[in-house]
Length: 146
Ligand SMILES: [Zn+2]
Ligand SMILES: [Zn+2]
Image (cartoon, rainbow, N blue to C red; front, side, top):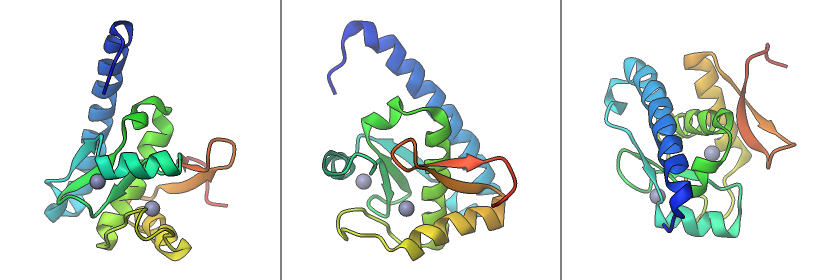
């Protein structure tokens, strides 16, 4: 990663906020799923970076490295509400117990995607939606389920 000096502070602040957010989600998940207590966020996974280069909205995956949710450096740049929902979504896949790499397979079934979100709704009461105005990234709807 190459950073310009003036961006260094900003990036490290972004990294701090992301780590705090991840820690908070990880604690909630660990309370219900003790065996997931060792999960970590891995930023800058090569496989994820390659996939993200092909398809921008592919920002994270699971099942690649043990006990890790992999993300790309661009993940630091998206608004935190999407970061939050994507982390929850990936935990949904982890709880589902299936490896979900974007590439391969090229297409993850809608069923698997929906199942990850449904598991988060079921266990944590959070509704994960897709923002058609922002790359179809996930966000948490705080309103009631449509
Ligand atoms: Zn990875
Ligand atoms: Zn997914």
